Amino acid sequence: DADVTQTPRNRITKTGKRIMLECSQTKGHDRMYWYRQDPGLGLQLIYYSFDVKDINKGEISDGYSVSRQAQAKFSLSLESAIPNQTALYFCATSERDSTDTQYFGPGTRLTVL
Amino acid sequence: SQQGEEDPQALSIQEGENATMNCSYKTSINNLQWYRQNSGRGLVHLILIRSNEREKHSGRLRVTLDTSKKSSSLLITASRAADTASYFCATLFSGGYNKLIFGAGTRLAVHP
Image (cartoon, rainbow over all chains, first blue to last red; front, side, top):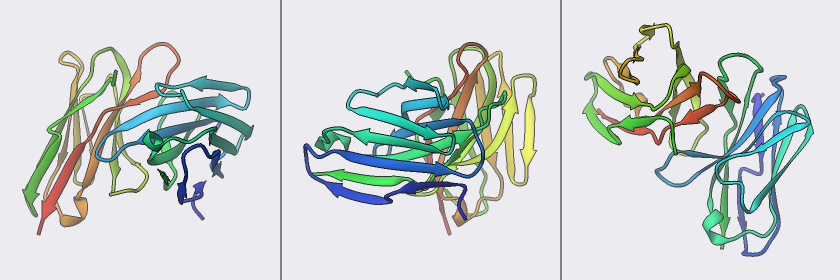
């Protein structure tokens, strides 16, 4: 089984809808991250959480919110989706160590019409 | 702004050739990592080099780090079509709230 899973893998929605993307991990890592990737570009950090009670905004948090329900679960919500949020979304995890080596989920492809 | 910037943005080579990608960064780092992304998939960690190291090898991968120039290079030797992917460098600042900062990536195409 995959260590970092994301659901759904693909989602098409309409402008104004609320969307939740979920991430679960079995690696036992404390740190979890949400990234956005636009076609042909690098990763932009949306939110990150160093433990259940420590949640921080990243570079592009506007229009997004998160919930860290447990060590293993980190959800990303789009309260009112807009077309320019169409992108590939990745969840990642890392250990609480000195390297921050990250392990990525397979991604969620989100299309907002 | 992104900490690491890769060069070139895109690289096209033939199978068997070597591929070299470069990464430059702006501030002091704890470590620098290289990741690979196959089209539309999650990134996969390839190799990590610490600030006190100058060179590391892993299979066909060779990474160098020059902290005086704030730059790193990733060399893939004897490339294969399966090496076709995007390659990202990521840097960890040496101070502050430590988390990786990813560059924009180099798209590598290896033609049979």
